[in-house]
Image 1 (cartoon, rainbow, N blue to C red):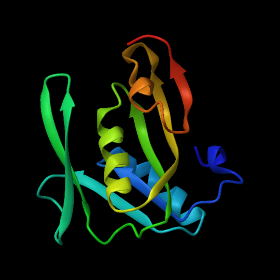
Image 2 (tube, helix red, strand yellow):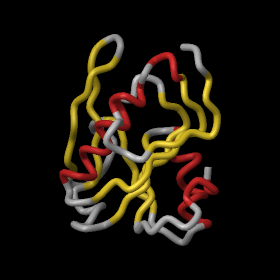
Image 3 (cartoon, one colour):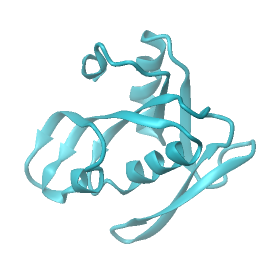
Length: 134
């Protein structure tokens, strides 16, 4: 996953709860970048911004600390899996709401049959493993 970021100019790594933490934290550490958490509603201790998004079976809300992204910062989002794309689309919108620019999104695995990449069409998206099914 880290190799997908080689040569890329960015300031911050963002990871979505919870496996995004597992993959994003060591990448941020190795590349000497700060790591920002995206969590389910009500889990972060300070002032937050939030975004509601649709799931296959309902809806959910994610949050980031309001001061976690500074205007103009270039952001990479890391997660384990892209399925329908809703969670990471919401995370990208939160980054943009705070004035950041999403310069790349990296997944370990992609379930291409669920067409999540279509929701992220405006972003540079890469996956390490692509499974054509659902």
